[in-house]
Image (tube, rainbow over the protein chains, first blue to last red):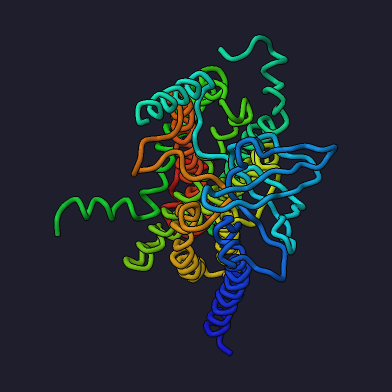
Length: 146
Length: 60
Length: 249
């Protein structure tokens, strides 16, 4: 084997290793591309039935109840809803009307028991005073429409 | 101004660990990279000077 | 051929780029320091507290610029790789290798600051969603480029192999960028984009843009400095290297 051929083989081997690594990662990636399912997708039977999965949506206003260390709330995508029970510490940004992603399993009567709850926040950043003004403007436009 | 005192500034409203962990590691990483490239060019120059000096001696 | 093209190729020779890079880097370093000072001042003393995340959101001032840089540097590497393959210029491979460590560093910082931001806000250091996973793949692409080019002794062949990695891997950059639109992710959407008005208060936006400029200038300065070392390493037997003033002692 000439030195040139040997180098070529090394380059080829390196690229092949890189390709295999990329394929493995993309494969793992594929099963996680759908990071969470919305309540509508769950209702349509799109969520996996044989393994744990994540649901995502908004915490329905007025649905949060805390008993001891268990929190119960409803996840909604405004079309469908799923009741969730979770025992553990909720993240700082968890609150009613905000985004949430919960991992767990659905039982026979449609209740979701979560093992992990993550807060999904939006891309808006502003000082509290500005948020207050935005909320007021929003309220005003709602009243006008009615 | 957002801060009433130095301790308030360092506490970052309870997020001190996360905020300073981010800014601190970033500053350290950029500083280390700067020192490493300085060292790399310095080392290379020193090596080449030595090689050139050896070449000149062998030619004399 | 037209005159400017010839001038352009003059600087594409390592012998003339070495002194040029030496003259340029201090200016970029000075700009980086100035932008960083202004950006940090705004980040901590001018930008207000966020209505949702309190002071914790201030991580954005390095997280977003670091993430932008990690993607942008990869695109620049791919650009130099394409030039190298197309015109067979020696300098382009050296530019790619000079950029790779800095790009890898920013990809790491993006993931690091993201973890420190995710833990308090989301409730997790890490999740395997499309945005985070594709950014991790970007870090692996940088590391793969560095490992592959280091493993091949002949620099020209190393450049070729590296160029293929960076040109193939550049597909990942739009995947990272659009991941939050294409798939359900835990990561939020973009606050700043071409298509809509930024969803941030103006002072927060200024802090972020100044920090991005600082990282940009830093990257140029450090890459110019590193490319000088690479040029010397590779051109060590050239007569112009022996004639350099710093080689005369």
